[in-house]
Image 1: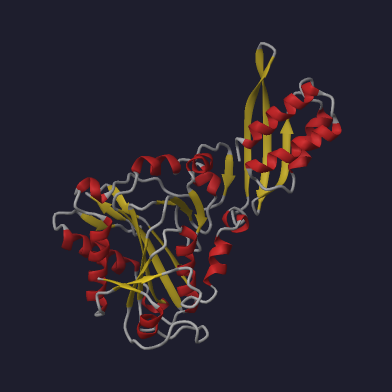
Image 2 (image 1 turned 120 degrees about the horizontal axis):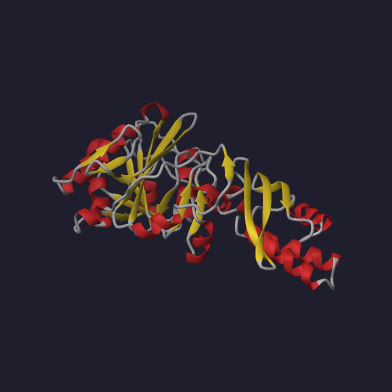
Length: 373
């Protein structure tokens, strides 16, 4: 049963938060089931942060249900250039987000259900949460063969991954969140989570590729709505609480004081890209020259998402060493981002305003370097 989370029933349902009195009140003694009315990945991730930072979960566990428009979500310690196809994402209008938990990269769309289990640190138990999901699935379709793994994934028919897991453990609170592939676009998922970038060396956490399958492919009756209700019912039974799904608005500052600043931070370049662990790129490409091609080598070190060292090596007879060095130095300090390749072009116009051939070669190199960002 869906219950709108109005201000009135807000004060009837929720509990003691470590926030001023403008937030939730302490009037219940058991758990709660929340569902976001938003499909914005940054707003929903902000809800996770807010609950983790402000809620007193002692004896009051929370299940948060949410779905997003097409998005790729990377783990706290991951490298987006290694994990996904950023160019294809820009082309398709798919958002990129970095969550605050660890784990691997996942694709979200409206066919994927996100589940976040909030508890105290002492009661944190990922396996129990996954068993709860399995019970809910079997309650809807007893013939489903779904099992949790030692890596805290859920496998369908012993081979297809339908759920991945990540978590964050704080000083006193913890949460475990997982996906559930209901009717996700598997073709787009596979394309977006396949990085085309070559020559990247990094100590960032790498995702482990898996064969995936949506539950709707197994049984067309397993819709997101049916599965959401089944999981809520199982959670309510397990925690002996009312089987109500309370709808929340992640942008409501009255219910969640300060939440919009959290969502805003999650959208910044500094968080999404700047938090990438230090990495290096070593690659090469060919450029046309007379009747053949010449090899250009590129070496780049990136720290906090910005280029720390850049060396472009081109044959001196094709591009003078002085100009090549100027191109390399023009990238230092800039974001490792395609849009940053426009400024170096402007630099050359100031250095050699009339040399069209040099401009052409410089632009070729900028476009090639842009392709690795």
